[in-house]
Image (cartoon, rainbow, N blue to C red; front, side, top):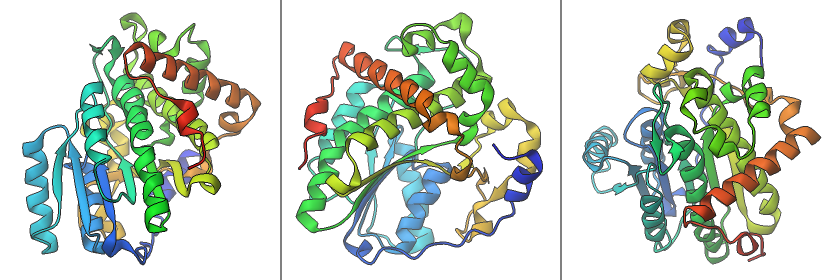
Length: 316
């Protein structure tokens, strides 16, 4: 992690906006958690860039429709955009959403931005809510839409993207130590009320997410599939609860999306992928990565949402 001075200085780094891909006018994109925050800004930017089809995946359709109406008004693209329901607290909702995705003619990218910060302990399907939403459901969706991304590569001769939005708050030493001390099954250990710590729970879910994405990308390399799979430790929007959790001082440093010319005032902090510590990718990190992966697949199987890894790892 950078020093605090470097971290504060980074908030004022100039961030140029890259040019859109040449084929974006034919492209289909999905953004989860698209009714608010950077998910909303991402969707709006895709409108500005001229993408043909943009799907806002949201938990509450009415909020999605309101967001879509605003985006259409601001971009002048009145006939573009769709709202699809996706509730990451329900694995059945994830499966239904994925089935709908697989009926699309084409998918260029899915940006899995949706996530949750929990200040109070709550179980859903026997799993602590932030672990379910940020890790289990997010990865299940990744597994289920990967075939459509691969199909689109072959059918349209394009390179597609599976992007899972993470955070390098997960790279704090106390998060690493907390994960290393968890006994037995990781998902069981993180779903015990007496050990729930809101200051650690969110970052550790993001660390589990990063390990899972790294493992998936190692099994399905872009050289084989044409699908770029990555966890993006991006300029993370700090929700009001997140600011309260981590530090009120962070809000004072947060810049706005307007400052990088995306025409909005959503606060976020700049967190850089170059700060990935060695312990994430070294031999110890690889063992932890395999542990996370095995426990994740075991949990999905036990919940009736198993993943055929052999099918995922067979070249198309």
